Length: 363
Image: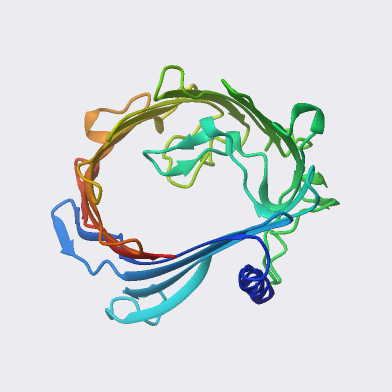
């Protein structure tokens, strides 16, 4: 991982000598709960302080990006520190990718997740696996000249970039475990972006009947001026226990999603839903709406509502919902600040309040 960071840094430094675009920001923020209630017990908490550094480099032959997080947190969960209220400092690489193009039609990507437009959930601020033609491992993308490179054809081999003795992370080319023969985890996909629509297809783990994922997405930008609508369907064999995205509560083998965005002048509206078609005792529906308004050139206001609905035998008291409001202020061309208020109720006995704030410096 150290070599990855050094390579990305070297490419960014080289940007001054070659034609390239460099994006950078440093964001100091906190985002975790400041108050939690579970039954009759409530607690005011220190949410922690985080610093995010993000840099992205783009050129004719190489694109790369890295995002790192440094934490100052409380209540370390190590068994020697439980209940001591100690502070600790740590950090991690939150995300990164590298792309190389020896010829413009062919891209070689590492840790390169590539999502179709209709798989992006703006309110949830997350993406669905059913629209991802890449992976955290190795991906090759070909753009045929005959389609003016509007078509992306992908083959991907997922694995984790870790150097450890944990043998659960490799992508076995062929092997045997207690369940029988294991074959390579391979994915294929395609995204075609036309002038009036975008269509996507992806298939993950195509050789494994028990873990295979197949996804379709369709997106229509500017159906009328300012209006975009999209939809998708995912069949995920492991979806009974695994989610399609980190922040989504809905699970299931067959899932549909739909969203729309409307923007006019200073006003923007987003709405989205994800629905599991398999009746089960778990969250099987999600809805989210968000509005944004640029009150002035430097002041933006926003509000959102999200709900995850408990399926089959659940009642209203089992649903999870969040209501939030945001204010963002641009100080100058480099500095911006913001504050948000979120109230979440997981069920009638579990509640929390978050008050995220940030200061962001951008290049």
